Length: 177
Image 1 (cartoon, rainbow, N blue to C red):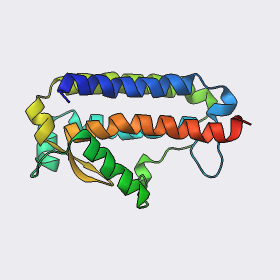
Image 2 (image 1 turned 90 degrees about the vertical axis):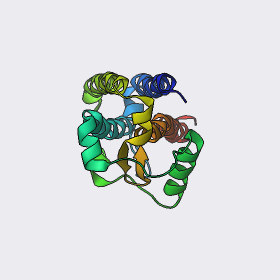
Image 3 (image 1 turned 135 degrees about the vertical axis):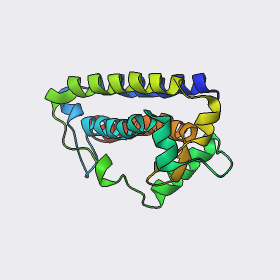
């Protein structure tokens, strides 16, 4: 996937999630059962993940010094997603610093505004990277280890859809009766 196409898909999938969660009635926004995250917590988790990425990619020098460059062949989109699904099926969970706090309905607008701003920032940051840099600079992932920036974008593009579908399933199981 070429850089511009990937950036657009990344941005679009996150917009879809935000619009979906914004459209939820308050009772659905805060609904929780069986220890699953609320819609607000799903959005907060996405924000926490993307904030780390934005901080990391804000400086090419920082990435190279802190995480280095990849020393293996790049993975395609499907391979990254398959590895992620396997990690989740094997019991992989988000580390503590990516776990969302409780999100109140009153925080809905602020959280979505913050996430939109963060997405715009990431989009601008990515424009400053060449395809070669996307394929060589490394970012650490807690379940998958070192990923190139492109692979991380593949994963985060899927990640938004994963949490969108997860939220739909959680709500359908309760509200479709």
